[in-house]
Image 1: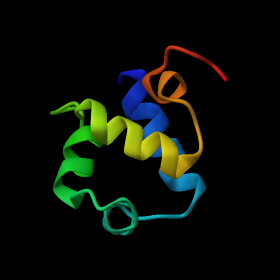
Image 2: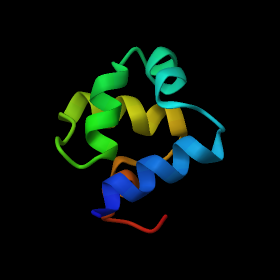
Image 3: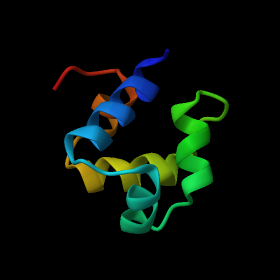
Image 4: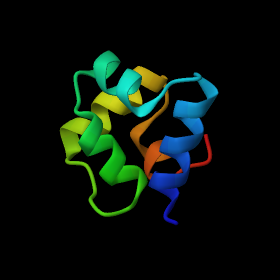
Length: 68
């Protein structure tokens, strides 16, 4: 499992959100979130930025580049 997949799942679960709830909160699709968490697709840059802002983390953290 890559770092992005691991961190996305961890952050979502920390907020007690389902994939559908996260999708609604971020205006992304549940199918996209599912495919990212199942490591069958990677998000585009804008989706990564949206997720980082929602979870209040850096894009580097979300992508596994940084531990902070």
